[in-house]
Amino acid sequence: MSPLCCVLLYLVLPAGAFTGDINPADNKTTTFLDNLLNGYDGRIRPNFNGEPVVVNTSIHVLSLGSIAETTMDYKATIFLRQKWEDPRLAYAQFSRDVTLDPEFLQSLWLPDTFVVN
Image 1 (tube, rainbow, N blue to C red):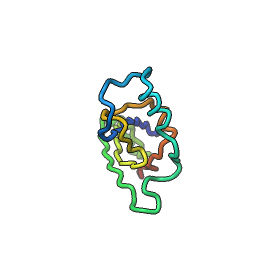
Image 2 (image 1 turned 180 degrees about the vertical axis):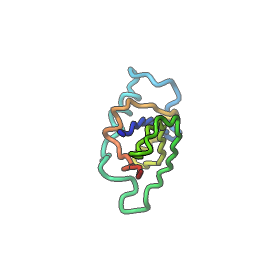
Image 3 (image 1 turned 180 degrees about the horizontal axis):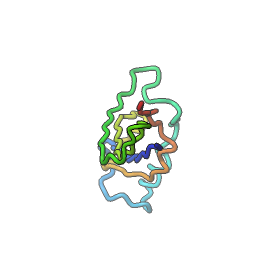
Image 4 (image 1 turned 120 degrees about the horizontal axis):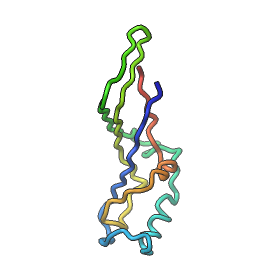
C-alpha cells in the first residue's frame, strides 16, 4: 500500500502595514515574496538547539476499502493534517494571510512523519 499525502500550506502572517488586496504587480508584494526565504534553511528545524517543535497532527479516515484477512492488507483513504509554528517565517509586512504555491514546500522544513502499521 502506498500512502497518499495531501499537504496544505497556509502561512499565517502577523499584523503589519499592508492592508490592501494582494496584487502580484504591487512592489510591496513582490518584494515580500522575493525576500520571504532570505536566511531560511529548510534542513534545520524551527527552534534548533531549543525547545522541540510541537506538531499537531490529525488523521481523518475517509474510507476503508478491501481488507485481506490472510495477508493483513487493507486499503484506506485518509486525510492527514499537520500544524506547527515556524518563527523564522514570521513577518510584519502584511496584515493578511498568504496562500502560497505548493512548490514553496520544497524550501520549508517539514516534519518527518511516518505511520507504523
